[in-house]
Image (cartoon, rainbow, N blue to C red; front, side):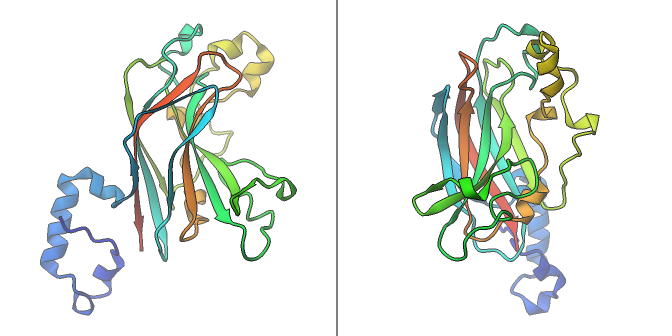
Length: 247
């Protein structure tokens, strides 16, 4: 299979590169017959079955390759959450589900002291006070972002493909299309909780801003998480492939 990693070479003139017109046609055919190629080559992978309950666990750690411009990251997952819950109306949805995967971003502490900008990127991350920075093994955590929630009560494994593309922006919180319809059953039982709870449509959100702020060599960690507050929740992951397109 011939994969064109730097598409800009095509437009710089075939005579200036070792890519021929036949190579380009072959790549077009390959992309049309192998959908995985649309997301680029695999840069990290784990196919070990792991489970975590009322805790978190690192499922996969990897560093980004050298790049000039990172176009997209695609996470191909197979996972599931708890297989029973008393909130029956939430079953099969992404509402009220406390089993999920996050992406953590870590950078080395060497060099200039990180600023507030360095310890919080725009997007669906979390605000971090630079004075309370999490530092381990000479690295600091920039932040953590939601990758994918598991469906509420799912006995079978489910496959998810999440692509964070540099050209896609997260919807504003005021846009209804960003959220699952209605509140969770548990939230409805408590009006104050219901007002605060919002669950992402599809269990994930576009995060182009995250991709735009990444640097070559950044360390990303795929974290399995299950609520420490809600009894019985667990997160199981069977597979995670990470693909990337860059120039």
